[in-house]
Length: 187
Ligand SMILES: NC(=O)c1ccc[n+]([C@@H]2O[C@H](COP(=O)([O-])OP(=O)(O)OC[C@H]3O[C@@H](n4cnc5c(N)ncnc54)[C@H](OP(=O)(O)O)[C@@H]3O)[C@@H](O)[C@H]2O)c1
Image (cartoon, rainbow, N blue to C red; front, side, top):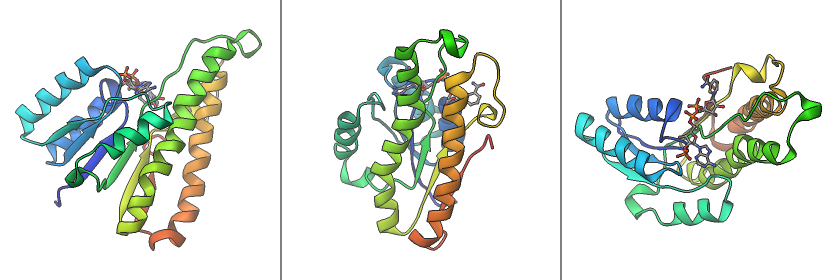
């Protein structure tokens, strides 16, 4: 299998870390994002040692557009051609009923799960279009299909991710002859 350069957001734990391990097992080189540098370093050390793959750490808050742009610009030339973007960074806060929820918490959830996902796509996909190849994997959730009590804003965010995937599919054909494929493991 051809070695790909894979950028995973939220790779310091959970599903993102699991994705990193899976890509590493298959010999791909990884750019790992998250905010917890200590955890990212631990993942990097483990993957390099176990699978002999190259790992580049790119710690930044995905909600911070300027930081995201600066981080991508800071990549060495040989790491800039990203083949796969895994938009995984995401979170849910609390299980409040909607009429009792916190607007500040909602900002964090929406900014991370939706706005940052769109911003990362906007930053990375132009290079894929230019190179005529690339994949974007957006981490959805069954919550985007089936709302649960207390899930209010999280469910709305994941429904937005699902809608975005469908739009991107529609655009992909026109952009680069179906080479850009949007996949959502949860939908
Ligand atoms: N767990 C589930 O049952 C489940 C089910 C369906 C979908 N999902 C989705 O899967 C994705 C990962 O969830 P998870 O369960 O693996 O959660 P998790 O274990 O809490 O991991 C979340 C990851 O996202 C990163 N992250 C959060 N906010 C960030 C920010 N502002 N900037 C950069 N990185 C950020 C965290 O890293 P730092 O703390 O280092 O920043 C961490 O690496 C999410 O999109 C979630 O909605 C999860």
